[in-house]
Length: 375
Image (tube, rainbow, N blue to C red; front, side, top):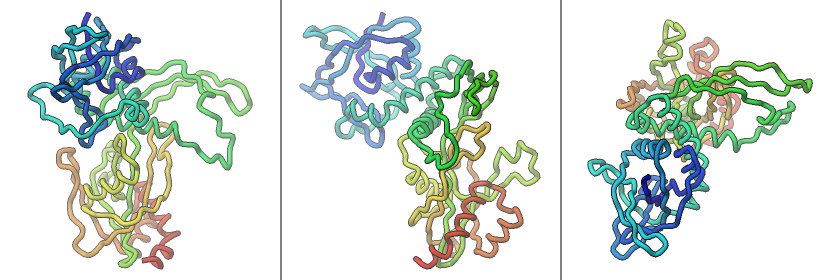
């Protein structure tokens, strides 16, 4: 049985339960000569030495599979256990705490950290992400492997939280709630950078009867943004070109597609922030005003992902094009300036074979005169 001092996100009981796989009793404890601080640019805290300070937390006693699960979760972030002395009920006792591996790069402590604020902003996301981390462990993935893609796991969790908070206006249709669906079985045959879920389910039909059990497979990805930069003064757009695996695997003779700028929405990031960040990364552009085209499911029958598309005002002089993308992610992106008449021809003749580009171009056709008048 190991006695572990908790000082950060695992103090959130739902997260501790999701990681450990069982309920664990938490007893108030204090680590002397230490403090819990925030981390610059990150939601989690760090333990820092502080003479005369006190890091408030809790002590848990854990063993067996629960301890192995907790050790795995912390190892995903490069943490391992080390011995400390903590005060419990006025008495000093020996315990352990998860801390970064001594060989890992340090983090910059910044300000204070609040469990209440973290739970409000990140708690639901962290619990969902932890469940996937544990599924990947059960599937044989190593901690370093899971840790390297945790950002994508968290982004998928962010997408699930966002979807649960969104409400369709339902101006047309009955719009039944999700509790009209009964999940009989759920499996995860593949969990990696993306995931695949297989479900056996039944649901209440429009005639009131319960459907027969149905087997369905769904590909899950994080939500993403797309951005079509438009210069209303020069009356031109910018599109990017890159190799896409969907068309390639589908057998397309020309798997390099013309697209808007696009990218995943990171955990804790707003769609607007993601749109501006991705445009800098892929096209080297700073954007002006963002105009929402639509929030939509690109292929709801089998793809669990929401796209949020924008047309953005931008300065697009000659010479602004070039190559971009993250080399470390294998991105090889070429940008193109397209005058308005050519863009219309591309749309009409099928040269725009990417759904967000088609939708964004159609929105721009409806709103172009207004944007130009305000330029």
